[in-house]
Image (tube, rainbow, N blue to C red):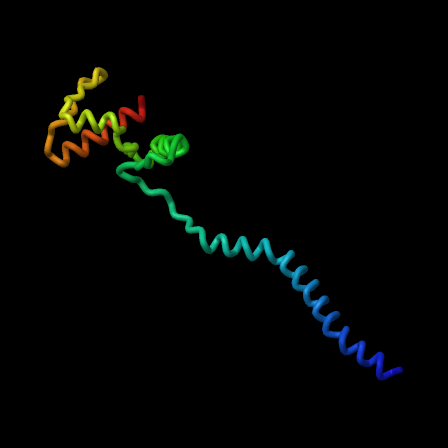
Length: 136
């Protein structure tokens, strides 16, 4: 009989030791998890003072949150100007430009010549038409 019980002990002993080690590991992780994650978080975070910028760029996909953040930065004196990138002109606007239609705004009497061949004037024209379409 004693030989038979000795065999059972040898089978259950590693299982019990493994179970105790798992419980101890879970307890250690539960108590050490938060301080460990905080230490790793502070290692990833770089606290740099905000420096003055020439311009704040707001991409078209940032929506209202991007505009509000830019407004906060302007109010705090980080920058004095904001550049808003908008979506490119719509298909109708592109067709007018392709046909050479001259667009004149009634608000500030700006003229956009659709027949211009200068790439810089074309880029400025497209950006301003897109901006006005986005703010309308």
